[in-house]
Length: 118
Length: 108
Image 1 (cartoon, rainbow over the protein chains, first blue to last red):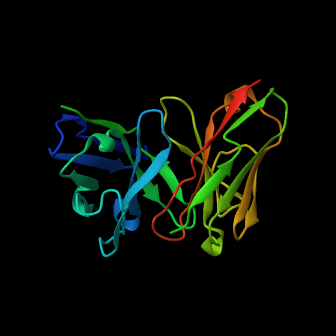
Image 2: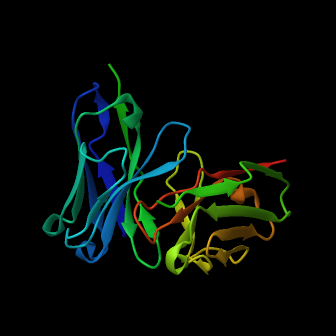
């Protein structure tokens, strides 16, 4: 089955760190760029970061630049998001999404909830 | 940076009616890399339209997209009960790959 499964979310204190993972299956992971998208409670979608298939190109939203690091391990069919210096405003469900230009974000995981609170 | 503005914020319609959702970009979207997603409560977004007008796999033909440059439209020809949801547009031709703020289609 073609799917993405996120993990690693949880409760963390402000200033803390968390590492999210996204496990891909059912497709050739190494052929696709990947993204992280988040959604704060009751709010809209916010693109967070993207990484090309070979990790050559990496982009971040200004809101997370310098604090979050996206990476991938094609041998393990996995995508990661290292989140440091977390703030209350980083509280959100984090989704990983496959990027299939020109077909946009055509596959999404179910998301993992990150709560930043003291 | 391209900013997307969706209107209206909420659309109140009855099943069987036609829904027209707008997405306006602050600058031209390259190669019409404009997508539409549907999201229901507690679920991940679902790709409906890419390239401004191409339906994603398995999407019913009552969903259609149009537009180019800075003005884009998602049309649902006849609303089914399962279509009441929030819809987002997104430009994915350049970084940041911004989303619009969403339009909620609710039952009147």
